[in-house]
Length: 493
Image (cartoon, rainbow, N blue to C red):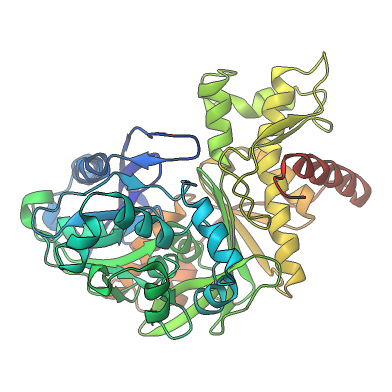
């Protein structure tokens, strides 16, 4: 038992990462793919792009590691959550592009359901809110808008899944139609208390039950790959949505331990133990992971745009060529405290849940510079994180530990400002690829490479701690400016 392959199918790229037994990265392969925006607020992926880049990067990682496929003990799969795919059970072909988690086309549908008084029922059963973010309304849209889809679904010809299910189905040659509980908990049709698909919610969204995958533990037997794809028949032993995978990868196994991941969006999850904590401040009650049938719940806040704001500054405004330049640019900012960027490109997530809000830049003057704008983009991620922390605190949740990961946290300026604006210590791990690391842990646990969560905790190592250096008065002044900027972009005041 020497190597684990982590498949990380994300929003902008697919990656294959090989870990050794000590959870050190041996090799990585990555391929980006195109995003499609058919209309304002709509976001799609070509499903074949997801699949082809997943296979290519998995093979590429094995090759770069200098090992054969037979040297891979097990595979873990982690994925962009909520992104919705429906495919033909006979051909494996999707009947529509994947509708991405960022997509807002079902805003009106959600608004109507709220008006009709269904949100309390949905929240009580799923821990979620009626928002286009989640899979249920996306699935209903496909069934209602793709010619013949509903008839074929009712006839048992189609399958629904989040990206993990689609990848799993293809890797196993169609033998396994399954998902794990963390991905199921994000669909809007899974009851997180009863831990089963909810018949009343399926009726509400008019979704046939025969579309749905089997729901397994996060560390479980998910079948075996066809040898054709990667060069050997390999066991798939761990699956988790990307943010829950990062919770595991950060070894947040005790209540009060939380992580915040900064990728395309920002996602903060706090371990709340074996009981679901209902939020009164628009946080999400979700499943952190389930191992050996024992569920651990979590409280989550989701920010739709984090790294995507930096990508927009680079590709849209062309203010710099490489994200690595942002730290030096921001360090030269002279108006960092008065320029705010609210990156509500696809609405605002938690705690606002305003799908119709749109982005804005506030505080511009004649001497505003590129450095000021870049600084505002970086700081926007930290301010949004404080929105989440404050909302969770009002729900009675307390952070004992905040661990950060994702592409943005290599920027020391960002992590230090995050510590400053939150007023707490923030830890950055030695291995920042914690999403992939988490499913590697889950797969390794299933096949006996690791004996317990305690053993996994011992493998986690801190690379650096960041302690707050900002005074309380300045912290409150800066955050007040942020709240003012957000109020200006809200669709409903």
